[in-house]
Length: 423
Ligand code: LLP
Image (cartoon, helix red, strand yellow):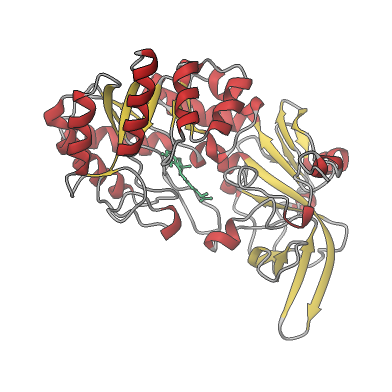
């Protein structure tokens, strides 16, 4: 028997007697018919609960990493729940501001912020700029020469802790493009430079060791290094980043945000750190809040080899399987609790063999062309890393709550594909 593990579904999921799924009180198959597929379905209550967990633990120092999923409705939701928002580019800054989030609830990130991005962040008055390099300090110096304004900053350091995760999303090790390295003395030099500079007000240290990290001792190790590095400078703030892993597939379990917070707080107490601690979760807020709905278009049975099930989306709405070899589950929301005994490979509609969504999927035996198929835990880094490859239209996003489905991002149209094309 292989039934979809319930904990991979959004918080308000429920099924009727036939196993037909509702999320946020909305029948999922009806959503597919109303809005079309592919479709991102978010459980609004789930998003709010995760934000509350983060705020309960770290108050106003809980900041949402918007790169995991950002649109104006999301920015507003996060702000309403009391989290700050981490924006990593001028584009993310623009969307958060367009949502009406006050600039003093935004934190400006990025490993290579341009002069213009820094100027804009200063101009609108973001709460903190997280400085990543000496060149950025120089850019802030020259902006200061012009107007005498010294923004509050954090310095991003790399603590030399290797988080066990995919190489592409590990950021805490010395060999990294991010931040000032602690072990080589660059971080100390950066602190001294910032403290001596009139162009910035140094508020603290920032680190992010990586993403999709399950081993909580990696976070403990990072806090230890950061604590002993930062202590002599006695700075008011220490931000330990995001990175908490989430369960994507059967057999995986991840710590909750509250458990993670508990571990961080213990490491902080053990290290005798007195700075205010901040966190920056992205994936753990958004990933399990959403599922993606597709329509099955073709089923190709290769006797003795495998069965390919092709759906109407693919690597343009979820590039994670191709980029990181990430695993996902699949199921039929018309029969959510059915046994999934049919092994299939679920692929997209893009013109390359690498375009797969679920390499080793399992579905009910009666899956047929026309079925609505769902992949759970697609709320993080799917929509945000989506593309128009093959000029496939980006899917819409609905937020479901109390039986109400709110379209927050509409589906792209063919006309949208020509908006920036000058012909
Ligand atoms: N803070 C900083 C400075 C970060 O760079 C990141 C993620 C976060 C917070 C949030 O990390 P989270 O809690 O979401 O793990 N595209 C990849 C993930 C890249 C993460 C980049 N930085 C993926 O799909 O797995």
